[in-house]
Image (spheres, rainbow, N blue to C red):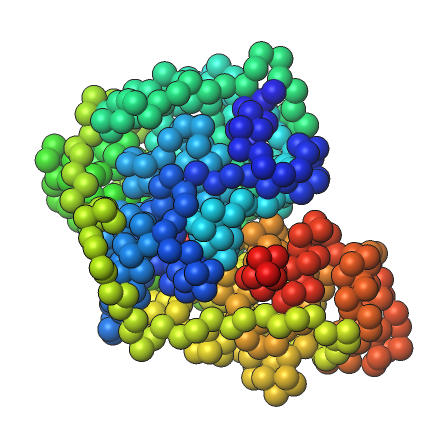
Length: 637
Ligand code: MIC
Ligand code: SF4
């Protein structure tokens, strides 16, 4: 078996491990963060489970940190109290970004981790089977339900050779993105093997598994080997180490070979992580802003390299440089060893240990700006400045470019090799353990509004095609996130006025005036984030079905979990037969769901279009019941 198959088979509770068929796996650990967490905990409360049934569940507060009004703090208080009262650990604001902290303090090789954030696969850097999902799936997993997924194909990514000076782990994942594109990983797990693996430390591996989310992959995984043991030992967690690797001669569904020695520094150009070009082709482009941080590239290793480049120098006068360390562990260690002073002295602005600009929470650049970011996503308007051009690069490319003020290759700068410390600085005093708290009262601020619930499927679905979208619509299009909107992640009615506003500002009004209807889209609809809001808001707007050429995994599951039918054209060319404003009708919807086959009548054009539903038996029940909470409740009757 390959490693992915081993991890799955050790957790398999239902189904057969044939790629494409539905399986269910036991979940050992969960994580939530605050921007998806309030909804996930409201849903968890609705299940009536008193104490989590996982080995470890952690609630992180790391996204919505601006606190421009009371709203974020209200959400933080709700999360802290609801979590502690249900046996869930809490990582307080300031402790760091969920994926970085989870890797440092909780992740264990061989365990499964389900997180309400699409970058949960970061845990694959230490040999976890770590998967991102919507809040409802995570809520159910906390209650002991298994997680259902489609048995993935496994892609072997064989690494050989060693990275050259100036080329980093970020360039490896950018290379994979350039080969596969942003939908190339759908239905697949990326499993890294080969002699190049042992040349990479855990933080480097975690950069790769983290940004594997941009491939649309189910997850990415590295073996757990001596490098993993060294990392866990340095975190005081050597007992959590187990060796894990694929069997010799294990078979894979696909194979990609990468010679690390041949790689060069790369960048993902606007507005997609898949739009990858060599830095050598971009050199000289004037840069206005540089942001170093995010769960992809804010480890001790990354920031020590940045500090080494910046030491004793001053950034270009036309550049604004921000640095947000991934965790308090990283920040404290940089403070203690003097590297932080090198970064500050160069002119960098130090932000708190949080997602910050990565989710558009502050630091929106100026009009038409070029912004280099070490993050994982450069979707249109994610920075909060619609006209900005965001390039995704490695921390060393970012640091050398901060000095010159133009995109600059790091190949001509000597970057010192950073050795990981034998012992990281361990201070868990911002992690609250539920066993130390009793009789916690759950605090619910005014901003916490109930979430919309799906209704039983009706026989007839009718309404207008409310909008017709192109390919690669991201969850940032469907439910934008920015400093103004993030405070309302617990308030679906408020957010509903911004649904798809990045594509058409009038969409919410139109949906409300028409009492709901249908969304029409091209391929890879819903790529990006796990935010369930991108399904909850359409549910609130009474969207009955999304008809697309294809869907991204997490968003498709979120739609079905909330009773919205994700339909795919039998013949993709039929996309051309639908226009905004067309009156659409589906009759015998329940039968059609059961048969996974639909006939859509376009009443305006008097044409019939065949559609299919690609899902498992469980999801059929779920769609008929009007969502997974209803389905689980029915199954318990
Ligand atoms: C993101 O990177 O887009 C986020 C913000 O972390 C999301 C979660 C969210 O929308 O709250 C994700 O990746 O799942
Ligand atoms: Fe936070 Fe950005 Fe990572 Fe999402 S991708 S978890 S917003 S740092």
